[in-house]
Picture 1 (cartoon, one colour):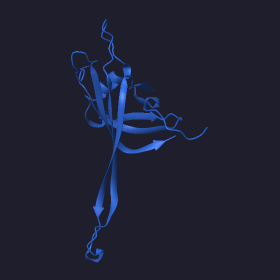
Picture 2 (cartoon, rainbow, N blue to C red):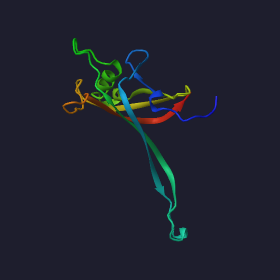
Picture 3 (cartoon, one colour):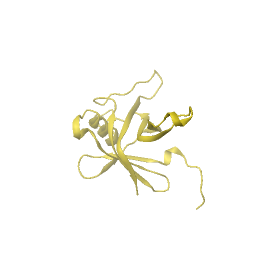
Picture 4 (cartoon, rainbow, N blue to C red):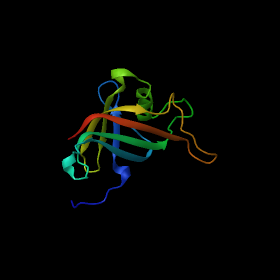
Length: 147
């Protein structure tokens, strides 16, 4: 098949379920990966006034936004959203868990993340005629791998 532009909705996001596998995160309407790099300054008098550097470290995070998914009859939640909210309450070594993104072509990018998300099933809000929002920020710990 030829190279083609891909729709963002074709990416899949899964978080460690806390047992022995992964659970899909549903209700996402947008995601934004954000990269970061930290440079080590190597500038000397010999640099003739131009800064010199090497990359000392890199970072990655994901902003996810979507709709709060809940059964209004019994309060059950989307498993992926609920799992992210649970992880968002953890501290210490347990607060970093496996996460994976699968591209439309089937490449899986695996990484460990910590999570900042709504607490206790809260929505991130909305107006009178808006669906209730939901969001999470996932911060990568260590180097991602692909398979």
